[in-house]
Structures are given as C-alpha cells and as structure tokens.
Length: 467
Ligand code: GLN
Image 1 (tube, rainbow, N blue to C red):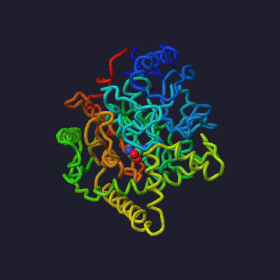
Image 2 (image 1 turned 120 degrees about the vertical axis):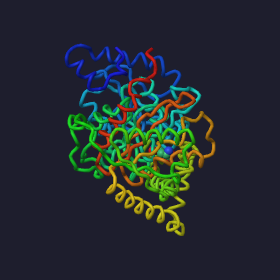
Image 3 (image 1 turned 60 degrees about the vertical axis):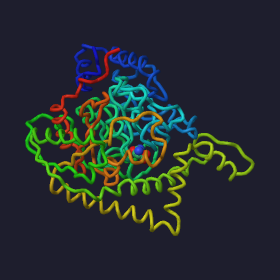
Image 4 (image 1 turned 135 degrees about the vertical axis):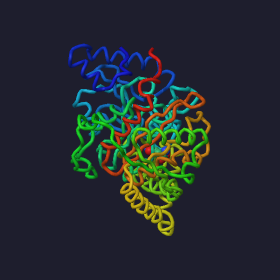
C-alpha cells in the first residue's frame, strides 16, 4: 500500500479496523527514507525504531524532542541534547505519532534555501540540483519525497510556506499565538510560529487540531477554543469573497508565475469566490521592516549562546575571550550578519531611524489588514516569485532576502496563511499559491483551501513515484 497517497485519518482508520499494522506503515516510510535520504539530505538525526502508530513524522531541528539532539543546524549547538519536548511534539506523541527524525534547516531558521546548514544543504526531490527552499527545507523535502507523512516546521517569515511551494506540498502557518512556541528555539519571538507541512489540506487541518491551543508554558498562546477536525470540512461550498493585489505586488513575481496566478484567481471565482483587486503598495516595505524587526529580536535571543549555558565552548584564558571564541567559531556568516545588524538597529542614535520605524510600519500593516478583512474573507497571492532556484545560485544575501517578499508581511501582521500546490511549471517544478485569512479564521481558510485543492487536482497525483 502506498501510504503517501492516503490521508492521516485514513491510515489511522485502517489500523483501528485491524487492516494494517503500525509496523507496515512504518516500514513503508523507512523504505522511502532509505531510497531518498542519501540523495536529499533532509534529516539531521534519524530515528530507526518504531514507537507508536507508524505514521512517520519529521520535526524541524529547531523544535525540541526530549533526549535527542536539537542542533538548529548550527555548530554552536552540535552537541546539545534537549532535556524536554516541545508542546507541539508532546501532543503528537501523546496521540501515538512516530518520530522518523529531526529535519535539516538553515542555521537557526535564518534563510530561504536550507543551504546554510552545518550538516550540508538539503536537495529538492523534484530536482536534486535545486534547493527545497527554506528554512524548513528538510521538512518540506521529506514530505515531498514521501519519507514522512507530515512534518513540523517553523515560520517566522515564510519558512514553512516557501519550501512547501518549492516542493509541491501544503504549508500552513497559524495565527500568531495559536500553536505553543514552548520548545521552539527562539529566532524572532514576536513572529515565530510552528507550522505544518503535509501532502494535503486535510492532513494539515488534522494536525492543527491536535497541536493548537492554549499552553500554560507559552504565555503568548491564545485561550480561544481550537476548532474540532470533524467540524472543519464537509457541507456544501457556499460563496466567499477574496482580494488579490495589483501590479505593485504581483510585479515582484516572474512572468510565468503571474500568468498562472491569473488562472488561480479564475478558478477561485469558478468555485464560488468573488474577487477584487485591492492595491497593496504598503507591502513595498515589508522586507525592510521584517529584517529590521527579526534581526533585532534575533540579536537578543541568540545572546544566550555564550559557551556557558548551551552547546559548545571554546576554552580561553579569560571569560571575554571565551565568549568571543565560542561565538565567532560557533555561528556561521548569516547568523553573525543578523546579530550584528540587529544590535545596530537597536543601538542608541539609530533606534528611532530603524527599529522604531519598523515597529510603526508593523502597526500600520496590521490596521491595513484589519480593514482588508472587514471587506473580504480571504487574500490570495503567490507564495514565491518563482520555482525553486539552483543550489549556489543566490550568493548575495539581499537577493536571498527578496525571496521572502510574498510571505513576510503575513508574520509581521500575525495572520494565518496556507500555501497549496498549483501545478508543475515549465521546468517540471512545482509552485504553490497562498491563501491568507483574518486572525483565528484557520477553519474558514482550511475550508477554502480544501475546495481549491479539489478543483486544482494536484492532490495525491504528483507525489513522487513509489520506491
Ligand atoms: N527566509 C526568512 C528569513 O531568512 C524566513 C525565515 C523563517 O521563516 N524562519 O528570515
């Protein structure tokens, strides 16, 4: 049986009815790992033994699992063993899911390609010369190649949705505060959220219904009740309204993607949507604001890696010397660049020019979105400006930052969003489109995403061949 083609719920049902054994399910995913992992390098740590229901799960290596390494793909945490599990994983484990491994990422989730890992780059299973996107590239590649049924990632500025688009899978990011960040290594705390990567929308909703909800160990989690999975789907379509941006935003995408996006809009209209173009010139500054806010927060969050409390230490004569040696050799260039810029934008004399402005921008963006979602139900737009790029192709950091244009504003505003696969474009590579919704409307978003997914008919069709 090809378990890649079934939904999580279907696999669990087969088990309940005694028609398949957990071991059978597990062995299926293990075979896929044996075949794909040497080519793709999606994992940092693999778990060989079955514990649980056999439905294999990947967990990004910046999310803790008790007793296993959590490296964040950084030399500085190379030997760090997590003493506790993240709430999200705790809840999955309690439901019987089986960990297949910890997945590769850009160091501390900073990047858009999964090339910046001290364990080497992850490759895109659709084309091994290309990146899977990032920073949750290991999770996306693992799901795309059928090595796991679903995976957890983290999304601070698009790290779940962008790799999902590049790998032809579903990538979901909840409203800020929906899923506990307890056990997620902090990058930019006011934007970080754990997200879900899966083969289809229903699976994302299923996992969401398990891991979301208030957690006393993360005071930013919301106490709102989490919708039950059973209530999320079914029932007839119904009409809905949506907005899409104009040339000022779509102009950032490549021609081919823009052409396809027009088709996507048409399809949304065909299934009952009423769309209208709303200019979003405000998004022009999203990248700048995002990189100011996240670098500022990262510079503070990463101060804890000092050779004393966590991970590796480089011995030296004096304490200061030890800090310096530990941090200069433990972090790689991109992380150092962000710590330095983060310190700079927060420093006296520059704070108002940079950090203060970015924070003001964030407020304006939130009110713009509030107004937008008082007029329409959803916002549709591309997830990525193009299909997956080649490994090594983006050397300039600014060019890499530009990759995130369509995703970062969502995190700055704390909104929920989902990227669903559209089709294979010219080079035989997948691309996804994004649905953004108002705060806490995950249920409505899943519903529309599932209807679109059905109309698109990518679901279960283009998963890589059986091995
Ligand atoms: N690519 C973005 C960055 O480099 C997003 C990262 C993320 O979402 N973790 O910051």
